[in-house]
Image 1: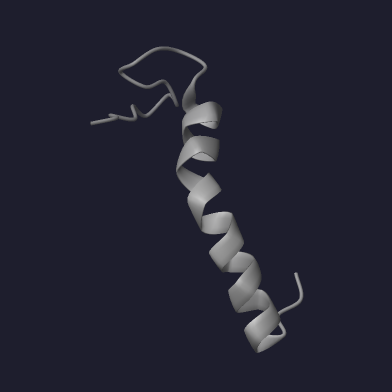
Image 2: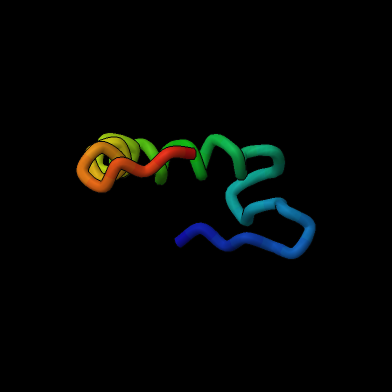
Length: 43
């Protein structure tokens, strides 16, 4: 399990938080795009 500390560091190592978030977000980006098209959502 990835533990996020208050200062933004993770237990796995410093400076990897952004890459962890990108890695988690990746599978959902396609679904988010589909939902935006379906409901005509503009950012």
